Image (cartoon, rainbow, N blue to C red):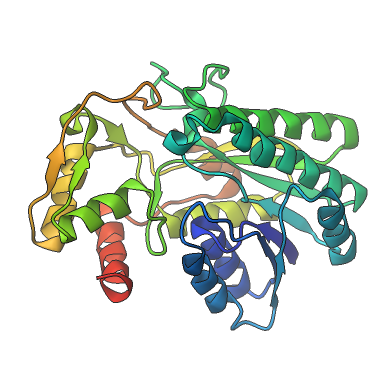
Length: 316
């Protein structure tokens, strides 16, 4: 297959591209290397991918309508995996206009480019945050949405809705994959696994909301990448899938796991959670297992051991 991966230099994007290349696909990566976090990290991710002759890179912004349409028209892609976005629930709180610009307008640009290029299948990276503060456990794909807790998940709901519109109007196959608390090697420095690890290593204090009595469905990045690739392989009309592990972990226990790996005690404050934070994320993955043959295989203890090895090699 010949696949365009937007956001290919990022944490999840680089793993998805790597997975596709490893099985023999051709990958066109697209990224604008923005400064949300240190772009040199993204350059390093791309340098690994560029070792493969079946990888090409487009340094461009999904908000650039003309360039997106040209890349898709010239690429002849079998599918587009659209991972490029402004990420992060907390960072989005005071930046609603920016998130709408990148995540909504940029997604519509990619949908238009796919339509005009007759690209048959579109995979869209969504998030578990779309479920908000629901009392329905575990989270199921047919749960009602519409009450996001911050701009970031609101823009991801908008992307899913626009995908349905393009499927209805233009028969574009559209699959949204909702990621649950992804972690692993090459993890972003703004995400909790990196923050907790880095703070413990350097004896810095961090915030652990609600004294750690919150739960997150931590999902190893290689498992996420396999689910995304499976979604790209299966044009199923309009579909939405949870990609998680289905085993929520208490945050206090997660911190203890990192303490054991690092061999040092954490220094933390335990404030109340802000209104952007749900008390739990918990994926029902039955649909993904059934229709995508999705099967997460890496438990949290093993995944964090691999993350710690990567951190030691690159940042300690």
